[in-house]
Image (cartoon, rainbow, N blue to C red; front, side, top):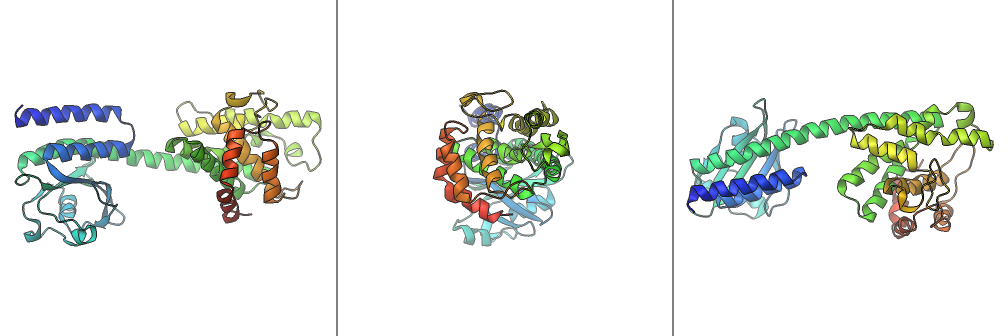
Length: 363
């Protein structure tokens, strides 16, 4: 196989891997790996441009801890500002090179290839850089190959930036909905934040993915959104509810689900599921559907624990707060009846972290 055929084979294999990969970090790691192989470079890095700070920071860098530096110095900075490919054949005798990064990382740079990453409006979003070609120096052919791979990287990074902006908007909307429910129910934003953090901790300990942990932390504070639809004379009543009033109160689970559910939004789908299931019980005596055991979603089972615990230790117009220890004992006593025993064991194991969250966000 000649050199051109080998490079084509590597690019085809690269495309197969990229198509199977969903995580941005994994995509960029794959790009850096393939670039390193196809260019026969010692290291490859992908830098993302921070326009506000006029800095580049390393999103991916082989064998190097994350670094950031001004675009006003260094070969990568030249590539970013000029929007042109930079080839360096002798770093320490080249005016574009910034030796401070070598000093900080303990690396010795000889040859460099830097390619700008541009969005669809020809604006700089980052730099793809290869260091120290193992044989000879980087050539224009190498630059063309890195440009080809960089088109994938630029598209992935641009999509990630747009996704992050959309997610931030969604987060603000969801938090405002949570605040509306708190305002009517006279709860505090600290209560809902604590519920989110307790839930994220239990989700992490249970072994859920980073994506699922992020979902439950954002969605858990929405568990009582349906209370917006409950009349104040019931919601704010300080005496015990009558059986009829309690039946009305229980409808807040379905109201919350219907308010939040959106087929196309994963965060709102998670919030809707939590709103519906956070009053279900492990033994099947909960509501609204009397689900039992693992028929209750893991999100519902986690938030049931987080919500009950924090409600017990919180001040309400109709009750004084329980002590942290007494509330913890209540969870233990109802393990296997109200609560998933596996999750209660994880709660017990991480009680110090739970207490830290409680202290840092105390009312």
